Length: 109
Length: 116
Image 1: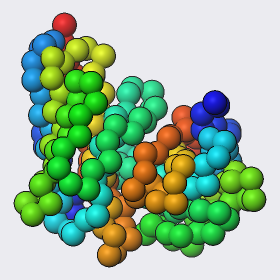
Image 2 (image 1 turned 30 degrees about the horizontal axis):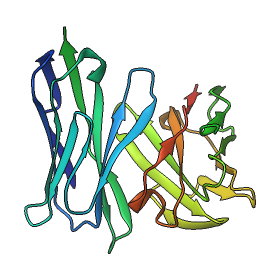
Image 3 (image 1 turned 180 degrees about the horizontal axis):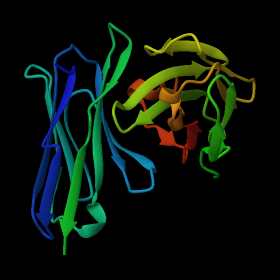
């Protein structure tokens, strides 16, 4: 079992839909990151969370430390949101940075 | 401000050779991290350097090494290349001393290495 698991692996949505991508981890962590990777490889850092909730434009990220779970929400999705979304968990005690396998999102017009 | 740059962008090598990849971070960033991305394993952390010191290393064999210079530029080296080393190698830089763990990372475009 991977230490960081994402669901779903693939997601197809219609433009305007509300999207949720989930990330669960089995280790104690100090911080969790959400990354976006567009076709062609470029990676952009979206959020770093250690507690609570963060919002940037149409993107919202939440984390529940007790339940070892984080979610990335996209409101009013748009075709330009089509990308792979990757979560990464950092275990402060272990000093390990572990990535999830990614969620491939396709938003259709 | 210029972004993170990586050279070369593409590289073809044969088994047994060695390779050196270069990364120039954003000006002022002292933390540089390296990652390997493959279709089978996804993204994996290789190592992180801060102020010329390796602070953290992922679970990779000793054939993978790196260093950071006083101007924060970093290189990674892979010796005795194997077919399985074919991958996209990404570097990222961060501004604060919290490195890639507690700070936003800025990624370079990557170097696509093919080992034949």
